[in-house]
Length: 176
Image (cartoon, rainbow, N blue to C red; front, side, top):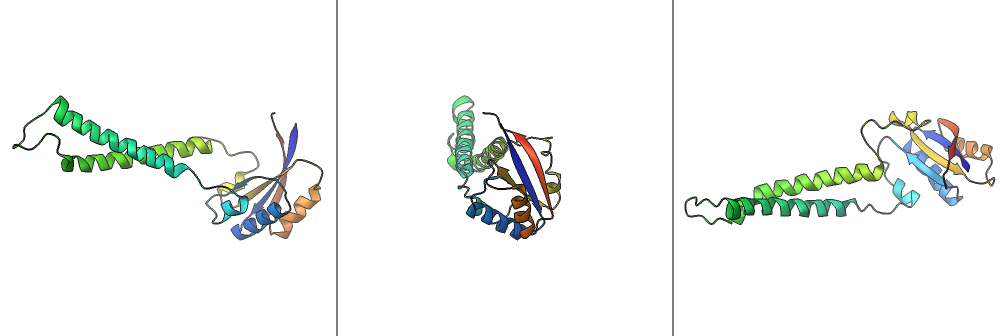
């Protein structure tokens, strides 16, 4: 089964927000919104829930803290205890700088890894056909025409009314 996609390119983010807001009110299915930078308020207009990525960062940071403290304790008190000036082997204040750095390192790496995995991004990924303008300074609103309730001219009128620079039409194959 195939669907028609209607793509409108906007050079102003406020026009993009207004067009997306009208599409939500008229119950036109929005397939995607592509932007070269984050647009404030777009997630509210599209009804996107808050990200769970901060939880991944917290879990990664806790794992990094445990690895940092555990490795230092194991290496100084368990595997190779050295008496340095009569100080205790398991001196927690001495472990804090390395444990802090491990918390930041593992938390940050896990955040980046899961963000790329969730967003389906990887180095060298090609831009989808028809969305080349979004890498420069344009925003794209991709609408899906599932049925004949809206004509092609309705989509073009919607885009022009909100100040779209260009509008295109594409076909996509949907696998069931």
